Image (cartoon, rainbow, N blue to C red; front, side):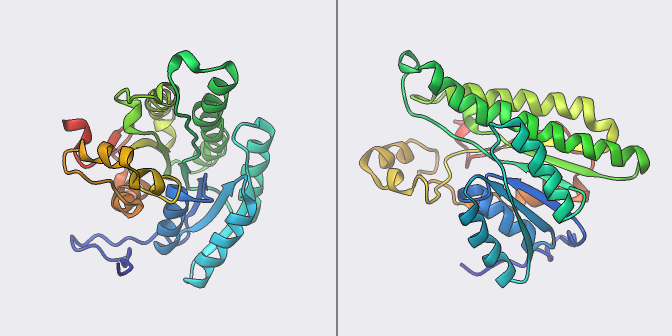
Length: 268
């Protein structure tokens, strides 16, 4: 598939994020890596954050080889001290964060009766608690800048899931955590909107990445895909347009939106 030129839209809107700084959590693989590449292609300096620092360095090299600018920070979203340190490091390295893509997430497949306290904490600490404190620490800095310049616009994009809108089998705790991200997004939009921060959530459906491609190729995975309205899984690039919309200045009137990108899954 040919690479798209993200600076040209046929409707006459120019996608140009030059001068913007974007922090992407969970950037070492999957959707996070794709989000980073897309924003870098659109002109952002991107700050790549996760625990897997070697994977981030590989991604940075790929982005720089394509003409983009990228920085790497170590981040463990389950560690509050790590969150504060990583965001401070990101702004020291790249500059004030304009766009946060709050993407870190984990899941476990099990029945609710089999969930241990450790299992519960593993999912909730990353998907909900971690996402909250990453957004909070970033927003503190955004709000301080907005008080100095009320015209300043910032964007927080939380990556939730259709599992936050509909209970899916065998991943009940994951569904609970992502439902929390949905409500968190709305609360942030209400409280932080007056400071020029637009907070929205993307709820992807089944998206095939290197993490789950073997599952989707299995008989069980094929049966699952066959139940979807158009009998197909999405690709990470299917979220490009929505990401660019929510990150851009043109989205100034979109705040607190919970947007499914699921190929009709929630409509069925």
